[in-house]
Every structure is written in structure tokens, then in C-alpha cells.
Length: 277
Ligand code: DGL
Image (cartoon, rainbow, N blue to C red):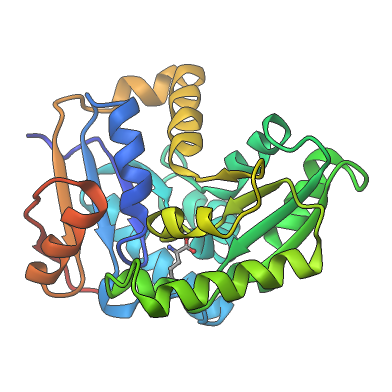
């Protein structure tokens, strides 16, 4: 396969595979290169500077591999690095390439879900501290339309990364954060899984969510948004190769990545090691 004009999908670890899975389902013909920076995950509690530096390096690697378009399939990276990469790095590297995130499409979708405007955002500490969700909501809809409650769930990524999806520990930490969320705003009618790892905990999350509350995962939303982007940007679409190729890169051991990726994707894959600085 030609990797010259692939779509790159990046996450700190495995979480972005939940996004890749839906993108591939929606747009199966394109070539994809997934990069998981597993050696340096999690990013969720790292500083702005470090997340920016790591993400910038990952995007650069994906460009070197021939990606023309990169999706930051990570809320933390989208919150802390996307704007700087778009505004400062891309114009210097190559203004014809593109980097897109997952936060904006999730916010655009909000009005299709919430009826009363009370929305809970579950995310990493880094994403919550960046205030990206409330700020983007205000930019898009103004101050009045939505009442946003953010909650950091720092124990959830380690649970997912360690495949602890339904044991006692997982039940405890899912129930704990959900109770906290409803204590803060009992009127919430929609929650956003604002971290790409969280969809794996969804069956458990659903057990602690009151009936009628909608849960938004980002995979399908990002996939639809990418399809729409490629429709609107025919010049980009024309550059992308469509041979159905899939390449998986990890900065950690490939054996572990392959085992975990099977859990996220529901199929066997073979990854390659990539060395980050
Ligand atoms: N998957 C990343 C996100 O969506 C978080 C994982 C991490 O903390 O590295 O925010």
C-alpha cells in the first residue's frame, strides 16, 4: 500500500482506537496510520507545555510518514495542543496539510441531544483544566443555551489502559464520579464522554446514569464530521490514497499494543514500534 497520502489518527495511547474504529466504519476506503504514544501515556495530568511538545512531535512523525491530514483523536491533545499546532507549526511545516481535533465536532453535535441544555462533560484533568469545552460552547452558542458541568475522572484512563472494565474497582470509580456529577447538577440530561478512552467503560457508566439521560460517545460524531470535511474539501480528498490500508504505530512494546488494540477494535492487528524523542 502507498502510505504517501494517508489519514493519520493520533492518541496518547489506545483511546483513539475508539475513534479510528468509527472512522474506518464510515470511510473504509482510505488509508490510515494510527499512532499511539503509549510509552508516554497518560497525557491527562501533564502540563500544557508537555502535551503540546509530545503532540507536536507525534503530528510531525505522522507527516513524515506521509499523512496529509491528522486527526487528534485525543481530547487532552485537542484541548492543549491543537490551536498552537494549527496556528504556529503548520504554516511553517506545510500549510497544505491539516490537523483536526475532536472537541469542536462534539460541541457542534450537542444541540442534537440535549433538550434542557444541562450537559455534563466527563474528561481528563487536563481537558477540564483547559476549559476548552465551556469556552468552545460559549463561542458557538453564546452564554445562555447550555449549562455545562465538567468533571475530571482521573481513575478511568488507568482502568481502561489496564483492561479493568467491569471489576470491583471499575464499578467503584464509575459510581463515585457519576454520583459526584449528579450532585453538582441533578438536571443534566446529556453527558459527553470527553475522553476517547471512556467508551470502553460505557456499559458500566450506563448502569449509573438515570433513565432518559443521553450519553454521547465521540467516535461516530468525529467520523461524520470527517466525512463532511472531505466532502467540503475536495482538494484534500483528491490527495488522499484509497487503498484500504491500515498501519499501527506505537512508542511502546508492540506485543502489548496488539493485545490491547484487539480489545478496542474487536479485531487482530500487528503494530510497529516507533521511537519518540
Ligand atoms: N484519550 C485521551 C483523551 O481523549 C486521554 C488519555 C490520557 O490521559 O492520556 O483525552
